Image (cartoon, rainbow over all chains, first blue to last red; front, side, top):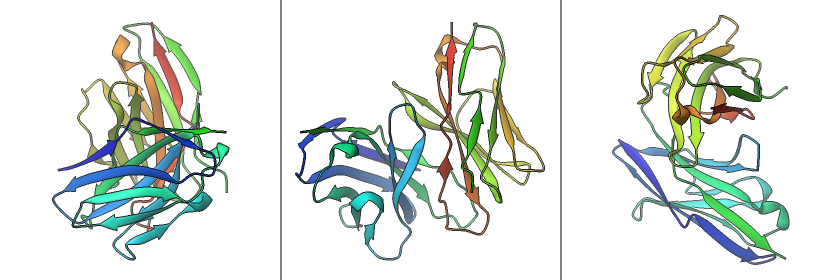
Length: 116
Length: 114
């Protein structure tokens, strides 16, 4: 079984400041990890994914995340926040089974506010 | 390529009724998954279809069902609606043979049960 914990349901940063959104996972098998973003009244957009290649993953809109197996973490960062980054962010995990199962387990989400 | 489309976008139903939601995946995608999003429970997996077969199922009662057609379009049905079924229902599609487990989400159908 797998699970995801996102620390902090709300995070506020000033425009231009570092964004750090925390995600810890639990998985009994090697995981695939994802970050999605959701803007109001919209679906989820994939920001980046970890699929057992490079541990530092770069995504869209300047976001990146680092997979740390020893800490079971996959924190999302962006060096400089922009007003357009205000949204809800979800970390998700799926176990690598090789069987083509596409079930994602999501964290509860973190709402990011950017203060001008 | 057009993205994942879901119809209708908004729906209001009464307790006890049934509802059918539709999802058209990205052209060429053969896997379609459904998720329920509520403020209390967050995002929860309902089921996944691949080549017209249900391949995976989440922990939801039998009132929730789905199917997939030969053109990969999918529908989900909820019978005997309850107030707690009010949620945003998201559909996601994945390419067969593409990047593993990468899912593309539609805008969702907002279901309100009164």
